[in-house]
Length: 459
Image (tube, rainbow, N blue to C red; front, side, top):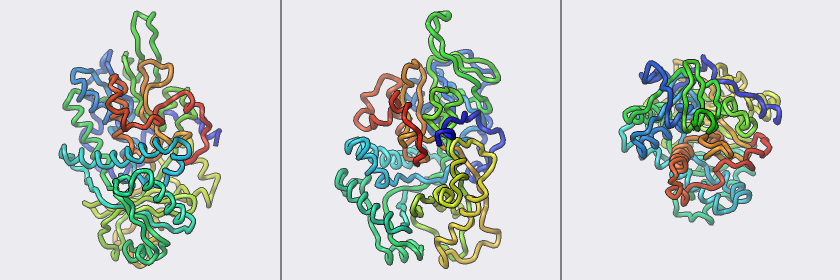
């Protein structure tokens, strides 16, 4: 794993798989706000996913006169955000025992509350601003196929409820036994189930909606503009301070550079190599079987060593399911290892493709029925996640690097972390940290100690 963690990610592939969400692309997909790049900018944001877009919007909301430039290597929202599984789901109970043991109960509670707040804020923002993105707050269910996972889950739920309070949203869980789970959720082999608040969203449309709001406030968006290098400027160089951002179309001087580049970040700042490691994920969009009714909840299917996650689009009825890494690890450990440090999203993993294709009908059995006449699989794709050694996001100013800021490494849980992490980073960047101190976990901030941790590949 150490060797995989130290692979330089390179710049994003030029011809990636096209996700279900990105077809068709939005009209701003290839936007260049200006024909030439500005020579200078107050803030240069690298990356146009949900983190970069939210940071741009928050900056321009708080500093309307700021010059904000966004550089995207490919099309707008072409990275992990536009390639996810459409879930706004935290499953905070699963990580709570580990967080409590490693970070302390107070930080574990703060993390669970942030995740819940992020879910709520995402759907409220979409509604408030009229972003048409299939925003659907709803319940979710974890279908459990392993007895030890079932018992561990019950203990974890009791633990988070004792710490947070069972009436609070972040700890509001309903536990079902096997018979009720099978009947209610249509999965004949379920050993039990946990139900709680979550949702689904078309993350590509949601993020593009935020980008359009930022553009209206003056954002300069430059797509298909990869950053080739970053170079710090010292005060004795023409009395300038900040960073030189090199692109194929010229160099920009920036007072502040914000890296929202997720799994590709170490290509631009090599000290982060091994601190943030790319991990390729895979998702499949499928036509539902003819016997499957419209599902009122989203799903996860949990087994020893992993899980899959699934939503049904409220507008198209398509099933979108992602995962397969846990099963790949058990079946082909060497192939599983190669998904770490992997930034090739031009291709899919053939083993995972077969598994995800079969997974839906296998889980629902007779409740799936025959396949649609048009076939089961509509589209499949890959995307590159950013993972950290301790499983927590990396947010804040880079140690000993004045004017260089980051917000990434949500470890595959960006839709329950990025919105609030972007809000917190904006507060910290603008010297207004008091506005987020009460709710933002201290353990999310990047430190030299966290950068030095050994990456083991836990997800």
